[in-house]
Length: 435
Ligand SMILES: [Zn+2]
Image (cartoon, rainbow, N blue to C red):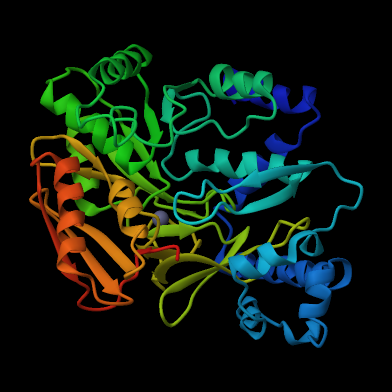
């Protein structure tokens, strides 16, 4: 154990926080055998269902006729109904058990729908920190290796504690608190020029920190990589690149690996469920952290998650809104944690034109959402050459309206990329108008 890890353990002891012991437990679990993982999942699942059905009004009603003895394997979770975000939001306080604990309020960002609010206990919040820390395990990083992260700081409740653990102990250098790439224009009103001063400052910070790892959204990584290449910024080499928060396209992975001369490790996690699955050095898929989550992929690919450790506001068979599939293969790394792939999930807000300028998907979405004629839409980009907006209509769209939309889009893009507005050929799945 090196000094920084001792510091981390000490920070846990001094703040009477159990995150470090939780982390050590999770760290060990990655090497459990398949049978041991199944036994652990089954025990946790039975305990969770019994707890929810006994103590939480929402689940008391929902599981009223359910016999816990029917759960003989983790697969038997399929006997329970799938839970949607709106059902849980409607249940409100009925889905929470307080039990005299201090609760911490959390919320999803709402960039891909209305913000979703939920609560966790103070102790489970510490467990969440442990889940965040386990992102070091699969890429083979050590606690204390210098790294930088370009995501918002999550632990806002205690800035001193955040500083101690993130900056001094973990040696993380947070270069931005922005959700979206710092080098992009801040708003549609701001024209398309990237913020060169900011991005050059970030490059300088990264260079001086000499990180062994970077943790970031794919869109931020590609923004950084684009400018490192464009301006030929020398010596920004990062061995381990942990990408999370958005679907990672193959092209982005390759572009980042070549630019930073490192290896990308994709991580699947959300605000509600930090660190659900992550790649190991074999890169044969994402290892599900099945010691703590039960992940299912339904016939249509919809991902359903049960958090086996959350007792305050349990998520039992929660439909998360992403799609993927289970691979059913063994990994050569020796971990029995099952493998999965994500086929559809939160996508980047960023569109990149051929001349390296940035546009925001959210600008197009905001314009489209104001039209009652448009029921659903999907915005895709083909190799930087063209943006295609596929629309599914609720009623006919007049020529004048179509022309107006194209005028707005072309004004925004400033001729940097071709834009095509077309009827949706098949199922529109990615974006949906809010009306
Ligand atoms: Zn593996």
